[in-house]
Image 1 (tube, rainbow, N blue to C red):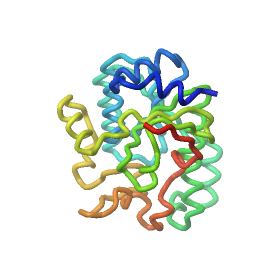
Image 2: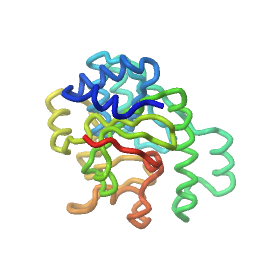
Image 3: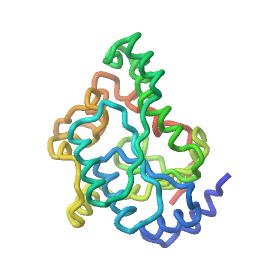
Image 4: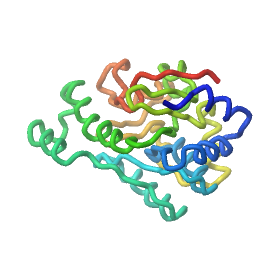
Length: 239
C-alpha cells in the first residue's frame, strides 16, 4: 500500500507542477488523470500536457455527452497533440439496461439512475484505474458541502489507490483566471450557467444563488446527488 504520510512529506513545499512531476516520476506508469473537460479538468490537462508530465489522461465516454463537450475534447487533442484515452461502457451491460428499461430510465427512480451511472461511469472507471497507484482529479473543496471535509491527498479504499487533487484549494476565480491567462479552451456551457457538466440528459443550468450541484440530477433530492465516482470510502491526510 502507498504510504500517504510519506507522499505528503515529499510534496510539501512544491508548487502544483512540482507535485505532479514528482508523483509522475515516483509512480511512473502507475499514475492517471480523469478528465470530463470541465473548467478544473482543462486546467489540469494544460498543466500536464504543456509541461510534458508523463501522466496518462483518460475520460469516460458515456455516450450521452453534450456536443460542446465533444468540441472541447477534440480541440484539446488538436492543441496539445497528446492522447486522451476513452473508456466506454460495457456493451452487454448497456444493451441489457436499454433493452429492458429504455434509454431514459434514469428519470424514473434513484435506483435506475444509479444503475445508469454505474454502467456508463463507475464500471468503466474501475477498468481505467486498474493497475494504477495514483488517481489525479479536478476536485476542489468549495464545489459541494461533502467535499469540504476532504483533503488534497486521500486513500481511496474502494479503488485501492491514492487520490490527489492538485487544485483542491483553488477557488473558482483561481480556475477562471488560470484558464484566461493560459488561453485554455473550455466548455462554453460554463458561460451559460452550467458550473458542473455531465451527461446531457442529466445536467441543466443553475439559477443565480443555486447550489453548485443543483443542475445535476435536478429531479432528485440534494442528498442523493453523487454519481459514485468520488463517493467511495477515503482516508484523508490533512494539508
